[in-house]
Image (cartoon, rainbow, N blue to C red):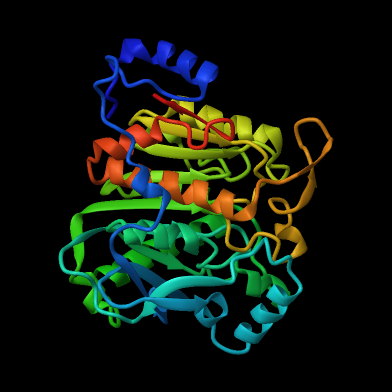
Length: 373
């Protein structure tokens, strides 16, 4: 997986620590970082969604897919991703939210035909009491670079369940439900009713998974149980952790990526240390980026939407020293996550040397630090 021999890794980490950048192994002749991941790709993005019942578990699940298209895109209010009465409820939440925090619009075509060709499939698992589109900015970036992304509302563990007063607990039982949700969603996209036009555009040999917070744990367990997964990325939470047992990092053969939000007072510095431990113990190759002034929801389209999602936008208190500070700009936080997750899947599922070079370089230096082993 690495362009560097194993003996070069310590020197590599010293270079990163001192400069925030990674010199290509062997001098200046290595691949140039693919900066295209920092913006939408050459392809347009389309989306469609529907609610399907998992008959085996009698569990209704709303599934959304983002995929490449050549159709004309348009500005899509994020509220349009919900039906009534949730649409109105969501609009009300946005109206009370700092305009610089939660995402309000996306660029996508509704129900358009996929672009010609076949594309890898990447599944997304949302955070505890969030929504399937809480990672929409990352999903649309990935899709524009030639991937199909499927996301699912984890029924009982969404924002709406919390607002209805019927949320599932943050525990191992809910984790099992969530892993089952991902498996069902992937099966639906691969050939389920209503998604046939997308399934025809899939490359069946390449599959990835990523998740945020509780979704990171879900992604890890899904990758552990599904050896066809070729890469997995966790945002702002350790995949293996003592609170939610089930994941064993050393049993995941796929390459892994991790994002550490330095000012993550939701999982605390203990949680961040667990992420670093996951990174060090990964056996299939691993990447880690740490983002300064980022909070737990800095990567999310829902940041600041409700008080629970406030850490990541506006004023905060550093979990590192207890001092007041201002979080990284919300658009910047989402953009950093989207750039690195896109580069990760282009490198691991697509064999893109430029994307791998991007993963091993700090963008922007001073805000991001990176490591690879």
